[in-house]
Length: 275
Ligand code: HEC
Image 1: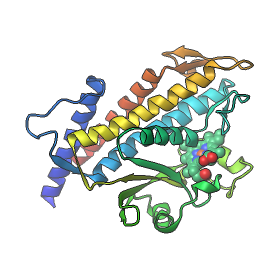
Image 2: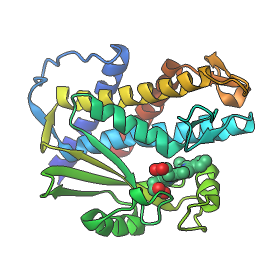
Image 3: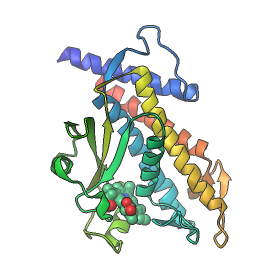
Image 4: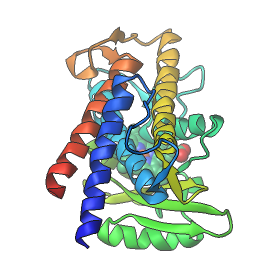
């Protein structure tokens, strides 16, 4: 048991180094002296947990700092944001789908899906084993891990919480909603992550984290490209400022920088607790 804790602590420390390394080197990690970058040292569950953490931070930052604050500045967000005649940015769920699509286009075999038992979009309704496991997640908010025999994929599911007022008000009032009494803090859904192998090396773990970050950048860039085509609506100024400061949007680099700082902080917090 003690050894287990030490192991976990060690891995947490290694992980925080990984973050600092990828951050400092702009996404390129260097080989470690002690452990070969090729040796499998992480279980797939651990790595999916890391990337799910990044996703939580990215998703909350986008929902609160871009959608929530942006709306106060008159910016619009819509499910049909890609349509030419609609001058709006992506809703949080569609931002996540954009990230999932970008990952799928790359060469890292990582799957990402956002589902629920009371979805706005019926295509997002959990089925089979995932529907069963989601019921436990709703009760205790603990992640669920299993091997999907049919798809031959290691699968992890993490609670997706109503972390901002915007989540609750938009879902409760949506014309297609299947539930009108969501509250702040509710488990509204879960992210499902899938990966083919059961363990990963440093390189493999970094490739997953980088694929996720690239997905964030790609999707955020698509949003800014959409803003650039606005004809009727005012175009926010793109730079270092955020919507909380006025009619501004951060550049993709500034946005990702905040995600990296917030996730590194989270890992530090975990480290302190592990001690
Ligand atoms: C402005 C409206 C809006 C906001 C804000 C919003 N959502 Fe959604 N959400 C939607 C819509 C619309 C969909 C369906 C998108 C699709 O797949 O077509 C969706 C999809 C989802 C899904 C997948 C299941 C489903 O309902 O289809 C989950 C889970 C979810 N949102 C949770 C959240 C959480 C948690 C937040 C806050 C962090 C949030 N949403 C913020 C509108 C919103």
